[in-house]
Image (cartoon, rainbow, N blue to C red; front, side, top):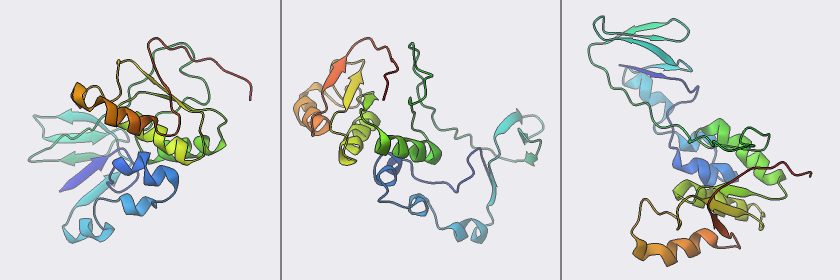
Length: 187
């Protein structure tokens, strides 16, 4: 078995990226799904830092961006998800961060610790956790921006509004709904 992945790290649990790891309470190795020795013990070849670029189904071969080729008899494609990118003026300014992988969490954690003001865009699970982490890091003036009329709208019924809204806004995190434009403010 060969595991091909574009990240350079062993497979790891992503939920901690917005919680313990972001806050510095969890070390990178603690996020690992399995002990590093497991892969060798199970005869699993790791092709880390290797982005799959071409899939030849008839030839039963996958080729990476660097040109390495791996033959297969069966294949599982588990590409994961990508962060939604903002499509608003100012979305490419320095200081706008996304969270998907460990490197993103490292950059975001450093930025949160140095920030004077924080705006979290998105009031789903991840946005809510980031607002809470921001508050834990001593950023009491953060705000949550959302497109939906209530926090965590997609994964829960309207009846849970009060408890989840209170949890997300603990520590003075007002929520705003509607259009968004990002502007650069002097520090």
